[in-house]
Structure formats: C-alpha cells, structure tokens
Length: 160
Image 1 (cartoon, rainbow, N blue to C red):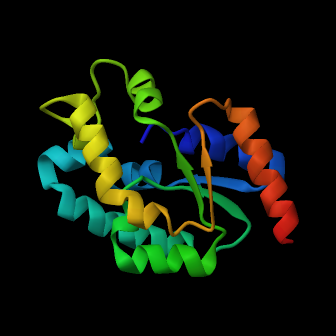
Image 2 (tube, rainbow, N blue to C red):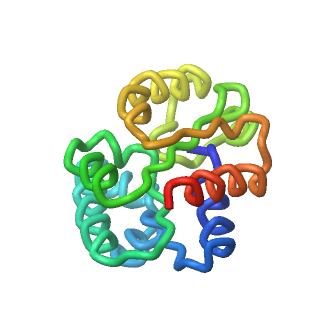
C-alpha cells in the first residue's frame, strides 16, 4: 500500500501498449461501493473472496498489466496463480516513505485505528515472506514513477 502500484501500473501499461487492470477498481465496480465500504459493511473475508474471483477472471486474458491490492498474495492460491501466470513484480518502500505517502490520516481499511507507523510496520512484517516470492522486486522509496516503470521495462525486455 502506497508503493505506487496503480500509478506505476497505469504508466507501465501505456509504455508497453497494454491494457491496464486495477483489481480494486474492478471489485468496486462489481460491488457498487468503494473498497473501504466493502470492508466496513461486508468485512475483509468477503472482500478477499471477491478479490480471488476477479483475479481468476482477469487472468483468463493475456497482454495486460494488472495492479493488485497488497494483501492479495496472502492467499496461497492467488500467489500461486500470479507466480505461474504472470511476471510478478513486487514494489516495496521504506516505512518512512510509506508514511510520507499515506499522510497523517489514511482512509485505507487496514490502517484504521491505532498508531499508523506501528500498523504499517506490522503489515510489512506479516507480508514480507509472501512479497519475497515475487519474480522481481523494486524499492520505490526514492524513485519516481517513470524510474520504476523504466526498471520494469528493462526487466520485461530481458525476460523476453
């Protein structure tokens, strides 16, 4: 969260002349409400099931750049699908960079209540083993969107 997935994904898709898919936006469209509203009204388990369903549908097509929510890889099946069917690119950032990007108040459902720094650090720790399974990871802490896109393009070019 706040590593630049959507912005990088959108720009990467444009650069590669591919379709851009933001999984959270597809879920919002299907549910008729924002992610934070889904979490509040229906709960995280409901959201994760919808996320799994949308991911399966999206992966039936090729030639696209997909931005997922950061928690998608916590589900083993999702992680396996992404690793097997895509070039799974992880984006990371330091706690300081994330806090700067998130601002003082975050509307993100997984950051509600408590100390923001502690919650960000907790999420990073919970997810680090899953994130380490990406085919390639880039630290976006000190990079602009175009710099991250260029690094990914170089990686894609090297793999094809």
